[in-house]
Length: 352
Image 1 (cartoon, rainbow, N blue to C red):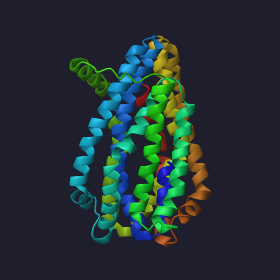
Image 2 (spheres, rainbow, N blue to C red; image 1 turned 180 degrees about the vertical axis):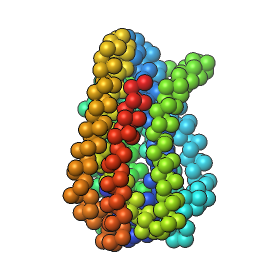
Image 3 (cartoon, helix red, strand yellow; image 1 turned 120 degrees about the horizontal axis):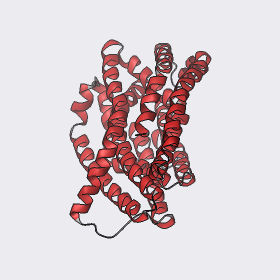
Image 4 (cartoon, rainbow, N blue to C red; image 1 turned 120 degrees about the vertical axis):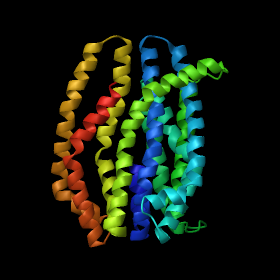
């Protein structure tokens, strides 16, 4: 969330066109993120149940197979993305200079997509093993690196030239590479959960099928939001033009930041439920469902109360354009009203 918020804030200093370009990238970036969540959820479900039943060999084999599957899947997505940037974003409504800005950003992002996809997968494996501190440290350090590099590469400080949108993408890529290397190192050196032995093809295919079976529902659930966002962005581009798309870029980033605790809760559910399933403590799983449903309503209500006095000033931090601020404020208020349904859907999918 901090990555997205930081990139959007610094890019917004370049102008409304650049802010709108960031708005167009959001749906596609989140769609690829849904792929990472699918791989992570599928692998984490197997890992937590294996560890809960004392089968560390299966957990290590699943981590390795999940990493290889992530690399292969991301390679396909990267190649497809690089070949279709212009037609894809034209379909979303980007054109002219804004399409050029989107191309600048996404060309670098697709090249380094593995660095964006791998950390959620490897961090998910760490959390599945009960290690929540190291993933937190890794992502905090990566976010700090991104905050430092964004102004340097976007605006050009010292010996570095001003790179604009390309600088934002490059800063994110560098920070994500650091996160990827760190989390994989923790999996190998601290938990011994990467099995480097060469698997039999049949065993690996069976492992991938199981990861897909468990991960696809989570991936599809997560993909619904960016698919809807892509549709809304196209509507915004057609009806409100650049200002409406810029407002969505601002609103969605603020909304995502407000959901940090909700995402944290959902992430914590995976190892909790998995270990209890593995230990056959099904009553605790049922209780977590009841608590989650009540919490979704409470979270949405509290968020709405927070936004009532703050939605406009928060939106104004990203743009001085009064139309952008007004539309962003409207977006945030409506999003808060519907938040309980989204959280219930997200958390229930992570409980399956």
